[in-house]
Image (tube, rainbow, N blue to C red; front, side, top):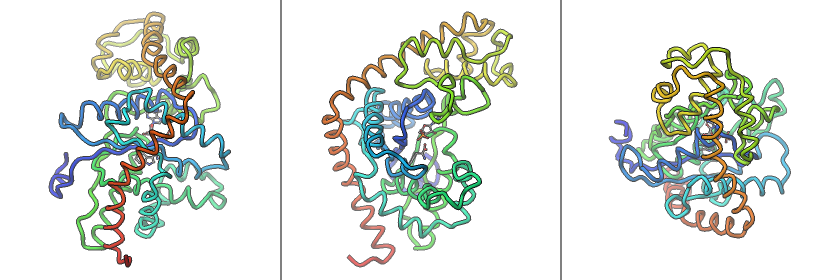
Length: 348
Ligand code: AMP
Ligand code: TRP
């Protein structure tokens, strides 16, 4: 816990979210879901902590025109992915964003706290809107204010995310601080991003300088959580590398992004640090390392994809889990929204 969260006395609570935009990758698993499960089971700095995990369906409609049936399927499939990977709906609050209306209600308040200039500086906005920002949705621009509301409606103190979300968490802190300052309260915590582990940025298997992403046109660039054992093994065998054997230390991987990425993936899947990983594989040729990595990836991922497929056969059970999650969540969010409205001056 940081001084700031300690000083203001907020009870530690973890929140994180993933967009149901179709197709979970190994990047989502190592950078996010696996760490969600670790926090649920091992707590935060050795202390048990309440964990809330969310499918952010309202965020998933900001970018491009979507097919409603596909969004519904993706949301349920993401829920199945969370559960198959070890998120336990009894231990964690597991929700779909639109089923907890206080997220969107607090987001409106934050739209009136955040400044246009802050939003314009967001690199994700610049990347996604591209040159044609006149034609981007207002929702895409306001995306980070909704994300701040997701976090702060729970008074969450810690948010496990991949490296790419760091700037959005900084904006969340700015919004909390400005709200507290403008209204002279100490109501919202200053949230900490938790970006740790060997695999906070899993890179493309075809280009170690680019993030592994579900939107990459090349399927060979990523491992999908729904890939079967053969596909996983084949993609790792074909992953880009260089002719040198693996070095003795991490320093030796400095200018070798493709090799570094595979070592990080090995570390993430084995639950060890990158230092320990390189110590284990030092001196190996890729002809030896890759089959071992492929076996490990299949051993860890195949049971998850099988369980996802099984859960998807009973979507009524998934919907029931999400309904239960939403009512548990609202016990937290309704009072926080009420108090926020009160602070802002809404009658009621
Ligand atoms: P998204 O799929 O963009 O909603 O991302 C969901 C979560 O997965 C976020 O915490 C991201 O930071 C994380 N994530 C996505 N891609 C990667 C990647 N290639 N490496 C590490 N984390 C990732
Ligand atoms: N923007 C995040 C992403 O694309 C998803 C997200 C939405 C999120 N709300 C959040 C992540 C709140 C953490 C906390 O990955």
